[in-house]
Image (cartoon, rainbow, N blue to C red; front, top):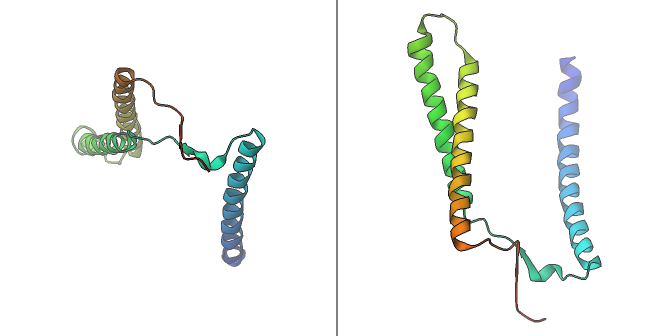
Length: 129
């Protein structure tokens, strides 16, 4: 069984990469064609910038780090009497604190967008062709 799997990997990895690249290019072209069919110029629309993206990632990583650290401390102190390691506490606390970080990011972003007004989805470029 291992021999056939070892023979299939060099074949399947390039095929998978080709399919992924082909799919991305196909979907990008399809999106542009849909915009043209609706009468829009694809060059005039830019996707919305994400000003809070760094905040979201930062709070997510801080939350997962705190969850991992707390799980380590609990595993070494509170659960020290049980001789087996408990990986479930690691996954649970990483998920809980990561979720708290994302929720905190959402609250901060929502508070700031209410104060400033909602940003638009697309920014039009006023340059004429």
